[in-house]
Amino acid sequence: MFAEKMVELGNRRSTIREIFEFGNKRAAEVGRENIFDFSLGNPNVPAPKTVGDAIVRMVREEDAAALHGYTSAQGDAAVRARIAESINRAHGTHFTGDNLYMTVGAAASLCVCFKALAEEGDEFIAFAPYFPEYRVFAEGAGARFLAVPADAESFQINFAALEERLTPRTRAVIVNSPNNPSGAVYSEETILRLTKLLKEKSQEYGRPIYLISDEPYREIAFDSVKVPYLTKYYDNTFVCYSYSKSLSLPGERIGYVVVPDEMEGAKEAYAAVCGAGRVLGYVCAPALFQRVASECAGQTSDLAVYQRNRDLLYNALIEMGYSCVKPEGAFYLFPRSLEPDAVSFCERAKGLDLLLVPGDDFDCPGHVRIAYCVKTEMIERSLPAFRKLAEMYR
Ligand code: PLP
Image 1 (cartoon, rainbow, N blue to C red):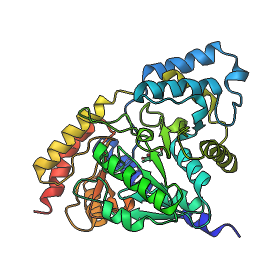
Image 2: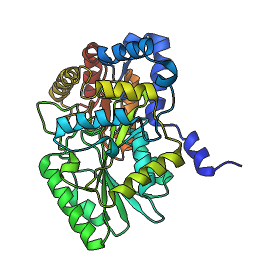
Image 3: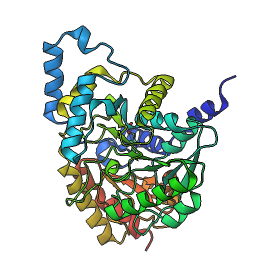
Image 4: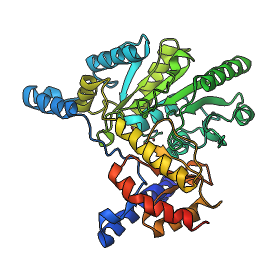
């Protein structure tokens, strides 16, 4: 009676959500302070005060009909121009508002790009561990989704496995750096190697392989590590950005796609993004938050909290005997599970009210994700539980 695939997707609950719901249930039983919930990537650092100030000022002073009215389908022209300037200041690029399409967050940015690109038989490739919705979005756009197994020693790119998967059907490769869930930042060396390979393969196949850079964590990078801006390395790059993490606004659903002029068929590519926005019903991102994003472009929440949390948790886990690639960005730790089956490991952790997500969800078994975008004080209180868990495996 209904689209079978949609019913299946709607019924198949995400493990992350299930763990989060379990945490809420336990909190009601034993008190929130006794639950160590590391399941969700929901930033606990508040949005900067300038966000609230901008909202209050606009709501008080501006014409309500205009403020809350429809904007152009691709976003308000002045908003896009201002955001383009902010990107240019940060990265030395030369975008104008005409290179931007405003969206309801990175999820929509990705869906719009996938839909803009996918024709029958096309394939999209991502690198494990990856955000599980990539597969859903890619298949939803009618493409085939392929995963490159992880390089678990560094969480950079497993190039041998990538080469095996590149074919004339490859339409785009998705990168996410800083990465959810590994926290890895792709080095400039990795990016140079990737873009060289994609240029060679595009030439060999006689059609471009696009790069889709999913970057909701762009600003969350530690120890001054450089996060290369991919349009400067590869012309055929779509940038999918979101303010969900940088400004701690995940519930407000605001972000954008960048389509650079240098891209092959740039005009057509931008038209395809607009067309995809129409088909998906993503026209006119929330007007108030378009304005907020443009007024606060270039600002961030207090991201130093995440580095403090990473240092505290990483150092403590290593001292307890866990093994983990040190994350350079985002707000996740992705240690090895202490038994081969990460699902069973997470069940044991659950018994200590320690809520972790098995790496299987990110196509990287044998690991667990710990989202440390939580209060530092909760991390401190959780350490005895992490120690107890490690002791169970001695
Ligand atoms: N991509 C990655 C890697 C993410 O981790 C997330 C959210 O956690 C998204 C995309 C979706 O972001 P948004 O909330 O902006 O849609």
